[in-house]
Each structure stands twice: as structure tokens, then as C-alpha cells.
Image (cartoon, rainbow, N blue to C red; front, side, top):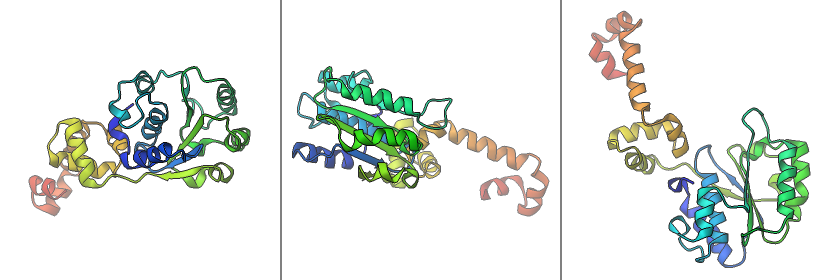
Length: 242
């Protein structure tokens, strides 16, 4: 789990609800792709299962938190689209529901995370409705989506929504500066293209700035050379303006 993508304000709010015994059984995490919804969902799974009380799970060393962070806890389930499919299959949901019916091996609360809930089509969603409506005690369901308008209403209406917002340009730039060990100026350029999403910045990669500069040079000194020189005076003037 990438702890730098966890949204602390969301986690703290849900942690307070958990401490007060008011945490709902089903949540829909909505926000841009790559923003940290799944990472925050895993952190919440740590909170509800932490042997140390769940006050600082991101640095907790208890066995439960370590297993969840490492992705090898037997009672934490993640469902997502298979690589060669365009949607989440009904068989995946049936397998999940069967596991949720079993007694927990270790966890205080069994947690199921369904990524990209907009990919749940009607048949799979209908099969999952009863689980959403009448979950077994000690079960937490978290669905994530970057496209809430395409999540079936029957699914969304049975979940409490938690919204995730893009990071500010300055906050993301500072994060990327430390993450990639680059100058704040370069981090600011990458943050601009990432549009507030650390996950999107990760997809672009640390070499994005180099690739961007190479593409720019190729554009200026390539087949558009004569037209640009004529318009802007010389190559360096064209490059500076672009």
C-alpha cells in the first residue's frame, strides 16, 4: 500500500465514526482516478482491525496492520476488473459473497473493496444487492469509482458517499519534489500535467519531464523548423515561447 496516497482528512473522519460505533457498513469512495481512494480504503481496513486501537495505522507495527499493508491478510478482499475483461464479472461477485459468508480467520471486521464500481453491470450488481442491504455483522464494504454517474443507482443508494478531491497544485508539487527528488520547478510542471492526482503523476513517471523536453525539441527542430523560424525569428526564440 502506498501510504503517501492516503487522504488523511477522509481517514480521520471515518476513524472518528468507527471509534464512536457509527461507521456505516457500506461506503462509496468517489473522486478522480489515481487520487488515492483504494489506498485510503485499505487504511480504513487497518483502522477497524488494528490491534493497537487504530490511532496511527500508517506507522503501526501490529500484525493485522502489517498484513493489510502487505496485501496478505486473509479477511481483506479486493475485487477489480480482470485484465482481459471490460467489466467486473458476476462470478467475481459470487466468489466474494461466498467468502463474506464464512467466519473471519483473523479479522475483527472483514473488509471487501470493490474497485471501479462503475464496471459493475446490472447482473453482477443485482447479485450483490442483498449483501449490500443485509451484510453479515462484522463486515465493511467499500466501493470506489472515478465515474459516479455510471454507478448503478441501486448500488449507490445503499452506500454512504465519501468524496475525494484533487490535491492543490502546490501540495502535489511538494509531494512530487520529495517523491522523485527533483527541483520544485520540475515538480510543479509534473503536477500541472497530473491535474491534482498523485496516481496520474505516477503513470506519467519520473522521466516525463525528459520525454516532454525531447518531444518539444523534436517539434521545434524537426519538420516544423522552417515555419517556426520564419514565424518567431530563430530556433531559441521558438523554443522559449513554446
